[in-house]
Image (spheres, rainbow, N blue to C red):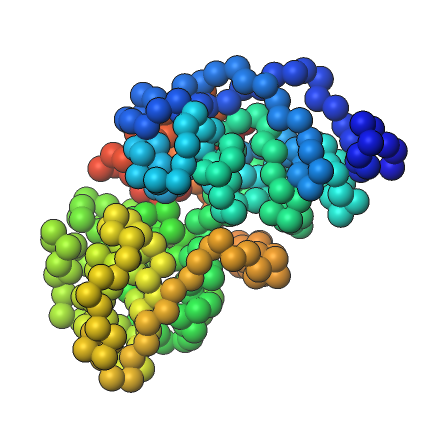
Amino acid sequence: MFKYKRREYYNIKFPLTNGRKAVVVSEPGPSSVLKYSDVPTPKVKVGWSLVKVKGFGINHSEIFTREGKSPSVEFPRILGIEVVGEVFESTTSNLSIGQKVMSFMGEMGRAYDGSYAEYVLLPNDQIYPIQSKLSWDKLAAIPETFYTAYGSLVGLRIKDNDELLIRAGTSGVGVAAAKLAKAMGKIIVSSTTRDLSKTGLLKRIGVDKVIFDKNGTLQTESKFDKILDLMGPRTVSDSLTMLKKFGIVSSTGQLGEIWTLNDFDPIMKIPNNCYLTSFYSGQIDKQLLQDLLDLIEIKRIDVAPTKIYKLSEVQRAHDFLESKNSFGKAVVIV
């Protein structure tokens, strides 16, 4: 430890240059507003540390923000709500130079610049040291996506012989949930899709039954023990009608682009002896995160991303996620 400009800094390692590459959004709009640019490297400040970005995933919420659907976000902004990388400079003795870390949520890429860059400055309490032998591309696919899926499945209390329905099954979290559920027990997994041409892809990741989503109406009369609803408030009421006795719906995602349950009467909408819950990935449980990483390695779960892009190709990554061909997780490796 030594003093520098009257502040105590730990584990200091100064960048070799004063600049970094980043993808900047100056104003909301289509994917063309994502500009690969040279920007200053953030300077470390008390309570924050600099992480050298190794990779990050692309998320639907970042598309919503890019489009101007996050009212609190001011532009210009570097997006990115998740990151995997190594500690480069730090202001705490709890982090070491070169330490492998993850970070996600906590207003990263919203209230302050996020991970679409070579370096990202993060609050110390939002940087999570991890133990893993996985490659960077596989680690980049995990933070927001697999953590959300895993936390949701734990909250659903899945057990052997449960019949699980995943709404929006071809999304990144939907694919992750199917893989995790199969590793966590003898679970019968059904996943929904609006494009039946993706049936083969879903079957290959272990899905037992594919259900067609026709304009928001599922083409099935089946009932389920547990439902992971990644569409969110748009379909929650419908999902509740599809539960067996003592079943649970977890309204976790918001892919339906409706954020709140309006005019929702719980007495009338929640069937007797059924339950409604949720999972918020912004409340990070460090032990749950490490349990997830351990499960992935022990069970050898395939967490490889569907697509891998370079930092200069973030626009292409957004286009893929918005396309009808999207499936699973797209990541950027820096």
